[in-house]
Structure formats: structure tokens, C-alpha cells
Length: 472
Picture: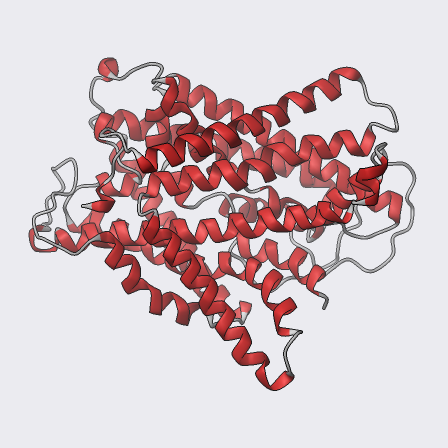
């Protein structure tokens, strides 16, 4: 299996926390007519519509979901849900654009499957600009770069999330009771700095990423999914009870905090990389558009309700992860431990993609007898890099917003509309469609620049209201 093919297939396994790819379509397609009538030919043993829907839902449920209540605080109790709804619509539209362009190039080049990087490369080849056509290979490289940046950014977020939750559980261990009447965990015992917790996790994570067998990881993946689903259900049943009067909450927050909302929201919605592999593995790919709209509709409702209810429940006391606001009792301490368990094993799955892009290239340059040691050494270095970044930025809200603004906005909002323009402009696009794509890309680029700036500024000069307990 080539590195390119491995990357396109395994990204689905990785992001949807499901191992054991079902295989690829048979080489060569017949019956192509025109891009408008093009239809994917599925596999006899491919995934059903329900399995694909579950993969799509799982691929969008991570740490970003738990940070949405704080994101709503940064936007306002009215502006936050409205903005989440708008970003959700735009994100789904960009996913649809990517699928449409991939179908176009499958038809044009007689290929059974085109991944994200290949779609952008072919889009530049179809561009009316000669310079872009001559440098089309950079399209694949740019997507690969942002994909690596995004996945390693997820890994940094996981380090900080694990450290924050473990620190809180250990700090309150002596006072944890069976009563869940309190509103949040009270830290009653001194404990070490969160950065030391991050460092203490390093050897365990290094050993975890040495596991390279996806079938073995799939066992832990299934357990991780069950743990996170159970935790999410317990969080929901807690926040819907005893919601206080929301009249004191601002309808629209200060504009300076809105870019932090944008970064967190895009981080949560960034599942565009799994779209093409999911469609490729379906038994009936013609159903994919319906699954995409239904699945992302459910995800959008989940995001809006958890973000709004979480902020309503805890108000100005909301923290970077809603798990940090749960009461000091064994039931909700177990929620933190369960979700941490799920995130720990999800690290290995998220790490798999950049490892398979970077490591095979490096290993191919060394003698065979050094291949295994080079592989393990590079894995260790990549994990240490994510650990170091987490130590340098030990604030969960800032790490999420920074990753969302820098890399997720590029993959989810900036590139797809530009891809549509480069793909169809020479064939004749309606000016309104061109204007729509330009507006979406400009929106994504503005969020990229302003969100990155505000996240870095908040990191350098933190505000009291948004500071977390990470540095305590």
C-alpha cells in the first residue's frame, strides 16, 4: 500500500475512531457520463448508511464539544448559539463542496477515489491561471501540512485536557463524597502544577503510540467511545437541572472575545478530513449527501444545546471544559475519569495520521536494520513535541482556540470554496456562486488572522474572566 493511499484510507479509521479499513473500490470505473450525473460505485462489503452516520457522529465528538459552553460565553447567550448555527451551515456546505469537486475529478480522471489533497491538486491543475497549474502539486502539500498541524494540535489539546481533569480529581480526592448537591468541584488539597501533570503523562503516551496495529487500537477505541458517550449523557442530565435565572448573562459579549469563540467553534466542527474516506467506504455512496446533512444537523443541535445549556447552568463560572465545573462527588468525578480514559486512547488514533504521513518518508532514507529504531525514535520525538507545546500553552481554552483558528479554519472554511472556484471557473460559474465562495473564504481567513492574534494575545496578557485553573 502506498503512503498516499494509506493516508487517505486510514484518516477515516483514525478520526472516526474505527479501525480495520474495509478496503478500496475496485480500480477502474465504468458508466461515467457527466459530472452532474456521476455516481459513486460502492463496495459489496462496504459500510451501511447507519454505520457511516455513526462514524460521522463519532468523528465530531471530542474535546472541542466540552469547550463550547465557554465559547458561548465569549460570544454571548444569544450571539453564541446563532453563530454556532451559522458556522454549522457553512461548514456543512464546505463539506458538500469538497464531495462535489472530488466526484468531478473522479469522473474527469477516471479514478475510483480522490482524497482531499488530490482534489486540491487537480483543482489547481484546472485553474485558468498558468502559475497555479504549474505548481499544482503544492495543493496536496498544503493540505498535508494543515492536516498534520491539525492532528498534532488535537494531541496538544488532549495533553492539556488530561492534565486539567486529573489535577482536579486528585486535588479533591480527600473531599469527594457521595453527595452531588454542590455546583462544582472544590479543590481542597494542594497538588502539583498542571504542567507537571502533562510531563508525568508523557511516558505513558509514548508507550501508547508505539502500538501501531489498528486492529488492536480498535478495541481501546470502542471502549473509549463508550466511556465518552456515557460521560456526555451524565453531563447533560446534570446541566438541565436547576438552571438559574439567565437575565444577568450578556446577550452579546465584547467583540474582543468573539475571535476566541470562532476558534473553538471551528475546532469543534473540523471534521472535513473524514468526509471523502467515509463516502469511499460506503456500500451505497449515493446516500452520502443525505447522511451528511442529517449527521451534521444532529451534531449542530448537540453543539448548540450543550454550549447554551452549559453556559446557562454555570454562568460566568464556566471553565475551559465543562467537566471542570461538575460537582465534587464520586458520580461526576467518574465522568472526568471516563472522558479522560476515552481521550487518552483517542490520542493514539489522532496521532496515527501525521505519523503515517511523516514517518514512512524518513524511514525510507535509512538502512533496513535501522528502520524500526528510526520509527520509534520519530514517534517519541513527535509525542515530545506535542507535550512541549502543551507545557508552553497549558490553557485548554487557548490551545483549542489557537488550533481551531490556525489549522481547522484553513481545512474547513478557506480551502473548499477556493477549490470550487478553481475547479469550475473555466467551465462557467455564476457570478453569485463565485461571490459566495469568496465571502466564505474571506470569513475563514479573517477568523484565521484575528482568531490567532486574539488567542496569542490572551496567552500573553490573560484576562481574569477567561483564565483557567491550569496555571494554579
